[in-house]
Amino acid sequence: MTGYPLNRLYEEVAFIAYHFHWSFEEIVNMEHRERQRWCEEISGINRRLGGETEKSILEA
Image 1 (cartoon, one colour):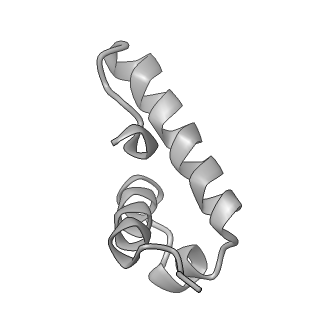
Image 2 (image 1 turned 180 degrees about the vertical axis):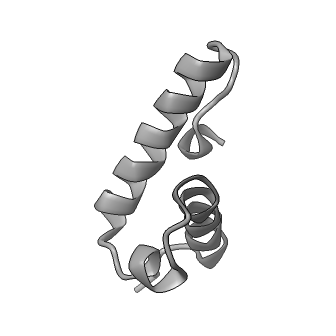
């Protein structure tokens, strides 16, 4: 059985923590889909504020 890639987990945690200033524990304890949803929402906010050129962290 393979788990969720550790590098991706750190990337999502860093992305959410940077933008929303939530703690590591709050973010890492979220379900995978919830973390991904917050990354999508933050990316959408960034696109609306800064133009359409910025990609979602999930598109990398």
